[in-house]
Image (cartoon, rainbow, N blue to C red; front, side, top):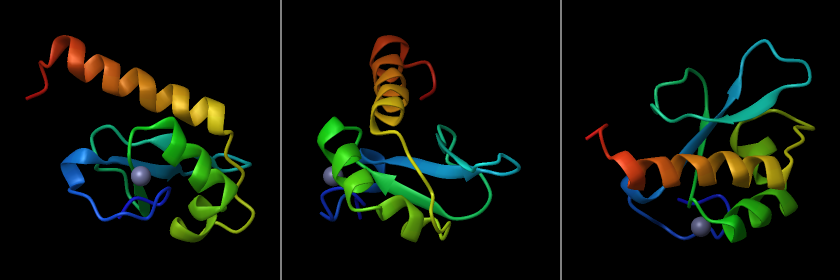
Length: 93
Ligand SMILES: [Zn+2]
């Protein structure tokens, strides 16, 4: 399920984000390989879903990190770069 719009979606349509361990304050990063340890949150690679999730503080509860702060612009940008990259080279399957 997308933590932004809360619609069910195929995992292939969603981007996984996770908390990078060891950062203080904790940072939400895009888990491109989908293999980062710990809890992950899934969302559509869309700015709308990113801002909805941030507004709802969905990352803090999905990732079980109370008080987690996420900059919607930073995250949308990180996600945007990834989806753009996939479309451009497609060399990772
Ligand atoms: Zn969504």
